[in-house]
Image 1 (cartoon, rainbow, N blue to C red):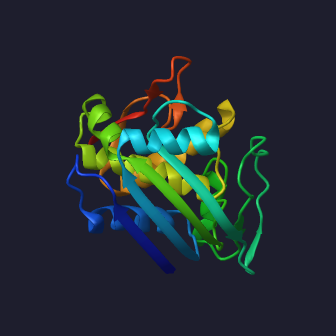
Image 2 (image 1 turned 120 degrees about the vertical axis):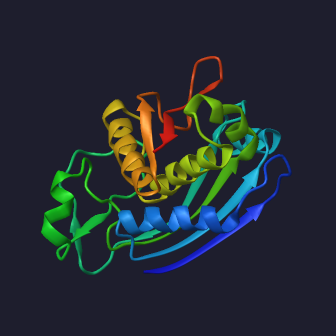
Length: 209
């Protein structure tokens, strides 16, 4: 796999391990069978992500993660997926390489949308939100931040959470990757990035194994 992951820490509320976060994203890319990836990550505070959320998405509240897909190219060895249609604003559909071992994609909800693909995108995550929400997941703020990064990465891989079926697919892929990182779900809460009517952000809860 060819990958370039650049992480820029623009906040001072939470001490972060760039290597640990890079490894988490690399694990996610491997699980999704991405052929090549260029990812730029900015770790910010609530005020900064609030401004970005308002400017680019017209949502006037802080959130946990915002992703900006920049490029998606299918690999030559991939074929279009034949799973359910994505939501109305989803990213491009990926493909499943013919040589995946044991028909691995057959048992995975939504398939592997970026398998064999080249992707590029930007992910913005709030460390301050991670600190606020981590107690609900019974884990550390750094683990909460990993959840945000994986969620943003999956958006760049072509998944969306605009409909209930797509939310369930995305949640499955989050759990698949987080389980590889030694994390597991403890409560079936909404996935990251989903805001309630009052503007608060609901999270899916996880804990360390």
